[in-house]
Image (cartoon, rainbow, N blue to C red; front, side):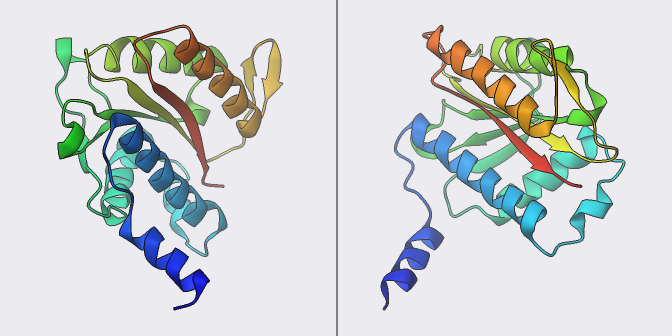
Amino acid sequence: MTCSEAIDWCKNLGRVVQSPDDLHQVALDRLDEIKDHIETGESNTRELFASADEKKFQPWLMNQLELRNKHEYTVHREEEGDRKKLPDLRLYHSTVANHPVSIEVKVAENWTGPQLEHALEDQLVRRYLRAAKSRHGILLLCSRGKRKKWQLGQKNRDLSGARTFLQRKADALVSNSSDIDGLDVVTIDFH
């Protein structure tokens, strides 16, 4: 077996989840695979989502996460949470069963810059991560349809700039809170 083949073989085995941080990293890895498939692959999936809303993206994303699952997690969609606060998706693993990773899905073009900030700070952090052991979250921005810019931090920002701005906010929230261990902003561009 060549070195390259050994690396590919290891990648296909998946990560051993031993901590909530591991599960969060697995979620980011799988979202990165999905992002790469959509943005650089020869798939025509992008066209299917030209006018889709969050409710169309959620089952598709759940399916994509399940297809890429290497016995690393289970995916649950919009489960009933504390006070009827519903995260779009949660990933669980039996080793860290009480420490899910919450994923909030937004079609970026449907929201203003301040609304995206609100989705990160209030919806994801204050609602979905308020459970005692839920300390990891991901805001997933799916971009489709007519390209848009968002007013964030007194600047108009494209999708990449919006992600960078929101990731800085996420990093600050993690730094200033003892209740959050991981918070990321991921984009998938369906254009």
